[in-house]
Image 1: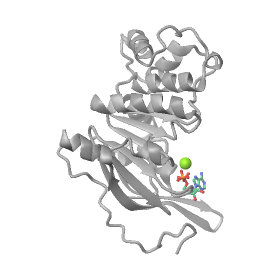
Image 2: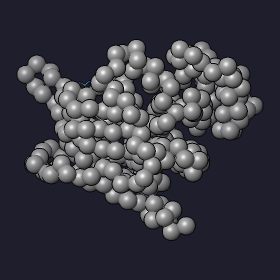
Image 3: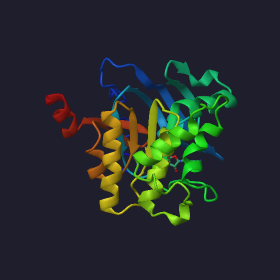
Image 4: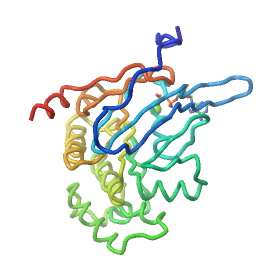
Length: 257
Ligand code: ADP
Ligand code: MG
């Protein structure tokens, strides 16, 4: 047994694939992420196979240290596998150099973090436009798009405000608008409601529900059960491995209608 009670030799054959017909957006083949510190080796990801398909809403749960953030960082091209392959869309990210990977990240991915990660010196409008700065060919209508997204998250009358003039919920709304400005294939959220009170969390989760109903693909890391039930499927991590995949009542409800 490992520290957190997950059997070390648990079978890795848990299929992380809905088997649906929509195109795979992200696919891991036997992904490992190993940190070496002196003669110590930490297997943050220890052989993960997964497929997330277009339009799916996944949550990743598991104890602290089980590899949740590492999965999200690899999915987000902020980190690379030590072994194995990560396909984003059809592309093998292992074939890309760091510049090509950044370009892919700025075109295909949206990020939402627990601590918002807004730029304090920039106002709401400019914060929303930040991902476009990293694109080699930013869209001509970027500012118009950012304005629309600000309105969409309820901040149309706050465009000139700086982050310090906003509440936590408002800052997370800016972060959500920012994650959408490049019309990403995949939205990645790490404990996105972790710093918010329960009422504000609900409002933010309602926004995620809206994105899901518009067909966005979402992967949300959380340790809160109430949050994971909003997704369609829950991937349970333990010790760098996938322990279980569970379908939620939400999915059953969607399939019934
Ligand atoms: P979680 O998000 O589930 O809490 P992480 O993915 O952050 O877990 O970490 C998984 C494991 O990898 C942990 O044992 C953690 O200590 C280790 N780890 C994460 N990042 C690093 C790093 N930069 N250097 C060394 N070990 C790390
Ligand atoms: Mg984490």
